[in-house]
Length: 471
Image (cartoon, rainbow, N blue to C red; front, side, top):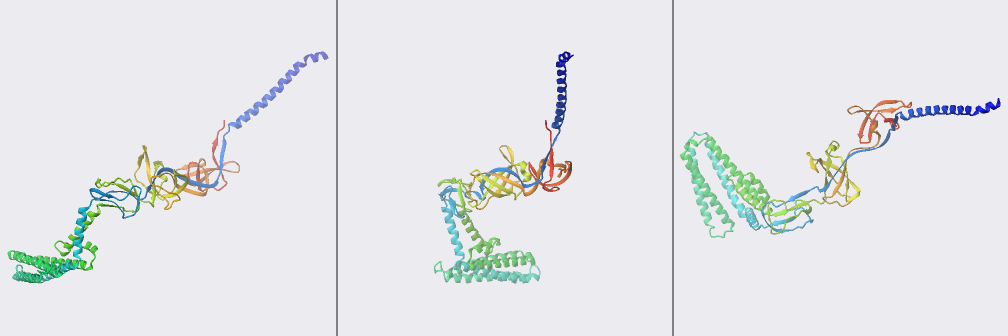
């Protein structure tokens, strides 16, 4: 019997091994299935609400330009006589940069200037005194004639007044001739002779006018009405006022006061002054136009001028201001929504890559330009008045325009936001039991990574940013 048991021991041993292996396989398969189930389940991603700084900006590039830059040229054609500056030379406002040959203009101005000086001399003032007196006499005559306004048309009384005026004018000529003959042998510079000559000339003019006036109304008595008589009176009064104004200007001795004569009526003493003043001003401007003058302090660039050169009114040099610069830069049109005048700008210069300057947007041009085949927005920005390093016109600069910034504010990743409707957002807040609660929030600034939370959350809240499926 014992021999039989030993004979069958290998069979029982094999069966036991098979049973153990089966049990182990079942356990392994069960654990593998459970592990696989856990591995394929979605994993919830979360983030804590925190405080931080948020900056929304857009970038561009451009160049430094002078805030005052002008292309200058002569205002008249001519031959360049002198060039007083060189390229890159600093000049002051009012400096003469270059001049044309102006011999004829100088002569004309000298003559006009001498005429103006004569007007303000004793002889000139005396001549206009005589004109003022004669204008007052003419006004008084017209005033006397106006007394006939209530008489019938064609009244002989008015003709008689005109004849009396004509006779009076004849007497004035005789008296003026006698007065002038007393000084005819005196030098031409004698003021008494100048006064007598001016008085004689005016008397002859008055006589001619009185004669023509009498002849006209004797031939056309029907024109003697109140309208024409009043018109004569008004004209005489205007001439008297202008003559008195002209005399006052000359007595004041201020040539700049001649500008008042520009509104003078024709045929008056004031108009005579106006014509002399205009001749002087035209001569002065013609001479000034032969000189190229700096309109502001700056540095000369783009100089294209040499003596002997024939020029027209085209620009011959550029003047750039030294003390004030600005930046002209270009930005993609997709950034237009975040651009506004007054936005802070941070400049980084190629020449000074480790240093930046702050400025502000001062102008956004109203039309797009095309640069390298792409439409861009043209923007101008200010620079500090006294930068910490040397700036030169034309420098290349990288620009960052700050559309908005918030410091120490609540922020969450943008992945946490759920848009309920245009402009309305919410987030899923993770509760203590791991459940999710949809919570409306108000957001402020937002960039590609984070959003500012204005209300709805507090620091330390945990929000869901989505789930990630694992393989």
